[in-house]
Length: 127
Image (tube, rainbow, N blue to C red; front, side, top):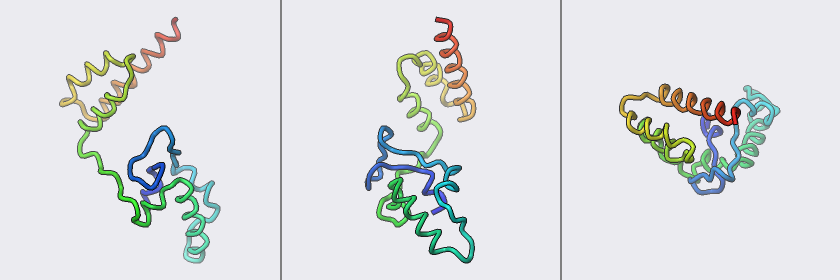
């Protein structure tokens, strides 16, 4: 159950809709669950944590009702998925990165996208 609260979904299906899902960031859990788990308060903590999971529609993943989506097997698949979601302003970097995906690790891939995005922002500010 430790990693289940970091993912999100919108209904009892395992396919999340990014337009309607709320993302639960692990740094905010301490503000949403007022009791810190220790050896004396399991029932109170569990009640609060279950409500939190249900509120973000994640409880089905914790109790086994929903199956988790498949994990990405390699960086190339993830990189191609990211590139396919970019709009036409990124066409130049999409072409360049698609040609060199075999030689880029995820860190370099992200760095290339960040540099291109900074260039786009600088161009838009100049206009």
